[in-house]
Length: 321
Image 1 (cartoon, helix red, strand yellow):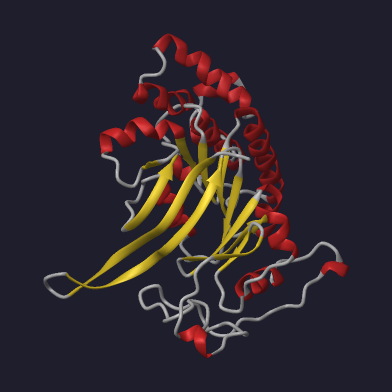
Image 2: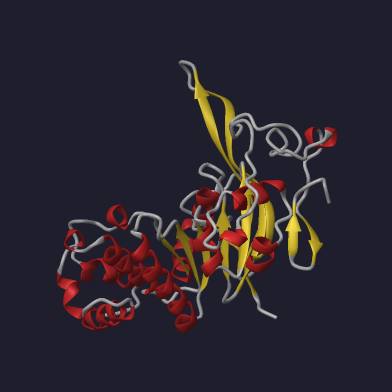
């Protein structure tokens, strides 16, 4: 059985709404509202959901780019949500992030050598004489040439820039990489190359991934388990095979029905949800999905369901079960 690397419990992120001359807080945007899950060593956990569901905010809290309002983030048993900045800096080498847009995440004024060397210098893990060798090794690992280290980001294509971002994330030999929409800004043909590279690097470096995406096909390809988020909550969590073969939550069913199927015989019945996604500033009472759920009943408006295991390894937050 794999060791638990990351355990997230009751994670919340509320952004204050200010109003008036004195800028008083009159409410909160509940971007993430009580998310819990675990991630095992060597595992890829996919997180999917509509835009605005809180998946990227969850990833940024795990990286401590954002401070959580409430909840625990246990990384190898240590709550990184509570550690001081000086301690967090020492821990950061164990978890890194790949951002959605490589064009904006790479400093255009810096050469590739300096971009990849920066983590080593910050953490004091390599002397200046060793850095060139490490940079060359990392560039070769992600499929680029050693001579590319003397160029600037604007001289590369989008896929090549994302390879550079991956090389920089690998520099400190992390245990966990949070990939936030890491291939969504790339052409489809390039997406497959980057995904295959990430799968190979996972095996080579014994990495764990938290892979955030709205692309169901990509998530199915790369993930061992998949979590589905809606309006800041986790509504379903299961193995990729189980979730795509037999989704249990009505929202997951609707989400999968909207995905194109390559085989005509495999086409799902299209489930069209009525209404709009509620505002996270004023989420509905009870189940967050009940205002759009075709299977909702009276109790759904009153009681918020907890995420619970229905079948071995398959958890769902729904009062139907």
